[in-house]
Amino acid sequence: MKRRDFLKAVTAAVALPEAFVSLPSFAADTIKVGILHSLSGTMAISETALKETALMTIAEINANGGVMGKMLEPVVVDPASNWPLFAEKARQLLTQDKVAVVFGCWTSVSRKSVLPVFKELNGLLFYPVQYEGEELERNVFYTGAAPNQQAIPAVEYLMSKDGGSVERFVLLGTDYVYPRTTNKILRAFLKSRGVTDADIMEEYTPFGHNDYQTIIAKIKKFASEGKKTAVISTINGDSNVPFYKELGNAGLKATDVPVMAFSVGEEELRGVDTKPLVGHLAAWNYFMSLKNPENDKFINMYRDWAKKRNLPNADKVVTNDPMEATYIGINMWKQAVEKAKTTDVDKVIEAMAGQTFKAPSGFVVKMDEKNHHLHKPVFIGEIRPDGQFNVVWKSKGLIKAQPWSPYIPGNEKKKDEPDSN
Image 1 (tube, rainbow, N blue to C red):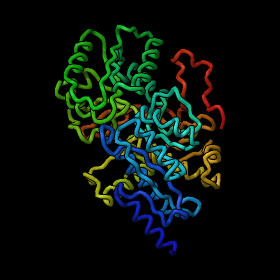
Image 2: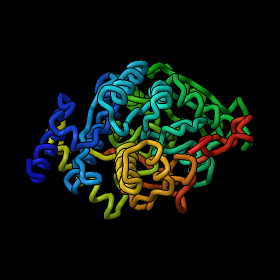
Image 3: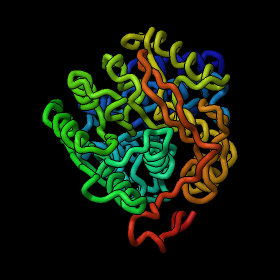
Image 4: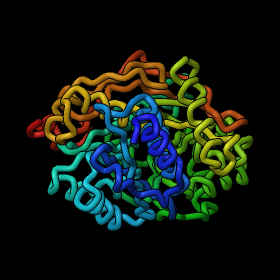
């Protein structure tokens, strides 16, 4: 087969729905890469866009000649928001499909589920979502934020004059490892800043929870007790839709009790009437509303991809932080493979150190030389009536990740780098 025809064949295959799994006849000429995201269940609202972003990025790389002259062949699996199934699908990707790398997971419980598999089989995972830290794995590259790159700057902003000089905090999250660990860090941080336990309220709901009437009533009562109050939301997945709807129904405005969210971006707000939510906040390392040439290219590329793939509401698709982190991760892996001249995991890990990439955020982000986390900018944005965000604060430059939070007792002696590289 001529190279031009081959390119057309692979590009067409990438454009197929998830039924596309592999191209056996091309196996010798391709590099298989795994995509491990929930396309059904409670996390599909967030993770489906990451799968599409991964396929788009792979198609872009293939259109530009692939990696070391080989086309990338995506292998898509759906763990269906089922955490044990993540481990099963990860093992399938590494042992049966023999992928060179996996891009995937959103929730920390899904990442925790697959970690033993990647360690046992010496696989390579790129994880694109902000998380709670307290982890450092040789077989993982973290392209989302650690707490000091999102949660801590967000709360510092709320406590500042510009952020409203907040004195009381509601820590509201989904009941699993990310919200509970993040809130453990935030509670310790707040106490270090003089906030007492009496001024901290902590609430959790299960995945898929959809009745926030009682919790919103408790928040209103807590906020009525005299001090400026804010909600720190680590709610994940489709529960954000009923939470924000109830927030609007209850008339809890941002001027009264601002909500600072760490897992709500442009994609999640697509299902919500955002007019009652104007002024509520989110902290991320990227917003679609950022103005720069790289972001214009990223947004236009995804809009074109959505139309080509006939995605639902293709004319209204949005980009968000974990999508940007997915895009960065795949491109950095490509650069590392080309530097190492192989997909061998050990050599690619070595080549990842210090990789840089001009990101849609407008910053040249860098993979730390040792700790497998990106140096990233931080932005805080206010929700606009159209579901986009106005940036109200940003860091002066890139912030290096601290995987081990200094606010957790016992972390003093932990090294911010894997045992070996």
